[in-house]
Length: 236
Image 1 (cartoon, rainbow, N blue to C red):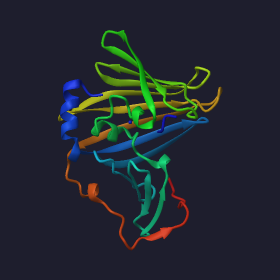
Image 2: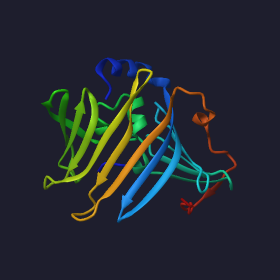
Image 3: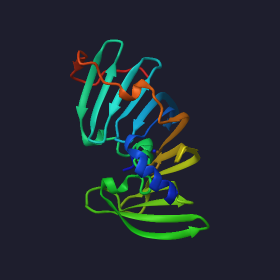
Image 4: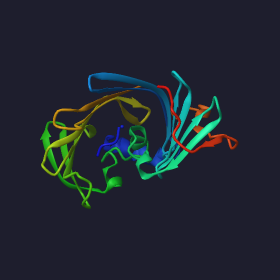
């Protein structure tokens, strides 16, 4: 299922060749609408092309989350010098938007990493292309995934269940160019939790900096941090 992130061919080649040491930071606002209620979370995100992802949350309480492509997750509370750690594939940030674009995986939005194979490609109109991906193994609960690109940039992603119904869809828009890297600054996702209910998530990126020197890119949890056995109750 889609978890709540293309470059023109010439730019893609440049981006992939230079991606080894690339990194990007941005302010990130995530608004979620579910059950008639809206929640909003703001953070500062730091991502490099090797997959290390750090998010800093400052309101109403300060804490950091650190993830990587192998599924390692850490939640660090600087005020109490406490850390909660867990390793699970579900925590992998391989499908994070910034990581996908930095690592040159935006051409398939990371689908190849999760066991999906390109089945067909068709032209849908001037500048529009639709790619259909099928799961390579059973048990995913997904019959197919459709990815639509406009001028080689991904603008729409949809997952379908076994009955052919859409179970989630994502729209990518407000593209901006940072050096030789194109990034969508607005992402809207809809998860259909049932026939009557859905969850709407809107993510906005601002103040994007490419290849900056912020020390947070190199942040490590202090070695003397007190380990926590369960997830702390963080005020949001």
